[in-house]
Image 1 (cartoon, protein in one colour):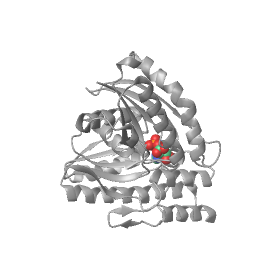
Image 2 (cartoon, helix red, strand yellow):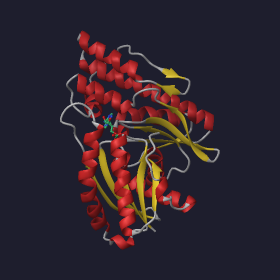
Image 3 (tube, helix red, strand yellow):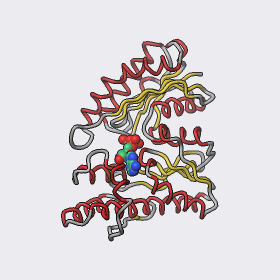
Image 4 (cartoon, helix red, strand yellow):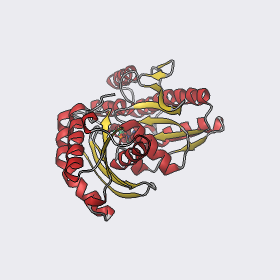
Length: 314
Ligand code: KG4
């Protein structure tokens, strides 16, 4: 069975093709870089509308298949930016109807977890999924995926990107902050973990206030990373203890950060758990993870009625 997946929950448009043995046959993507400010939902939607029709034939050509060989159309149904999700759902429906193939909508966050498992060989991990739009600790327990902890406000990637934009470091902020942090030292910033959840908006405001006061940017970047990542690791650690699992997986675009990897790995090792991280090209948003999760869900539950393919915001 061959599945074609379409991703477009935020600023990345992706199309991926996989078979039921987990072979990645085709992968095409295009990222939107906003000229100024953050991601505007309407601009992201326009980006997807422009690129999906170009990326589909590109992925099909790379896979060396014909459209007839595709057995399933999968798409990211949510969570994400409303206008962006609508373009993805409409494109998927159009393709499914024109090829007369079944369609399935999948959860974007679980897509990250399942492609991570496929790529790393992890069987049943506690996953820390960190990106521009989401920050969640997810694990499969008692027959379904459950969110053990998540952000109470903005995502960690959003926090880093916002700080980067406001301080003139550019977008995305994450990679620049990581570089500057290497020569910084620690200053006190608010550490907010409430129960199993974390919050980044107060941390962001405090970091911006430090910048206004003239504190060295390297010190703020270092402390922003150390504080935010410690919060993420603490909640992952609690979920690990609670579930008694022996695998920890890091996924999502913020996984690119070597300091976060190091901190999470240290925590996992202290608990006798194995640490996993998918290859970087599968960590960020991509169509392959959507194609793969669609295939798994189709095997388990069969296709969706096209009437059920409305977008899901959470
Ligand atoms: O999953 P992803 O590719 O897509 C979205 O959620 O849109 O994640 C993108 C996020 C951005 O916030 C970016 O700043 C962050 O990943 N990121 C990093 C690094 N590289 C990318 N954050 C911290 N350190 C990095 N090296």
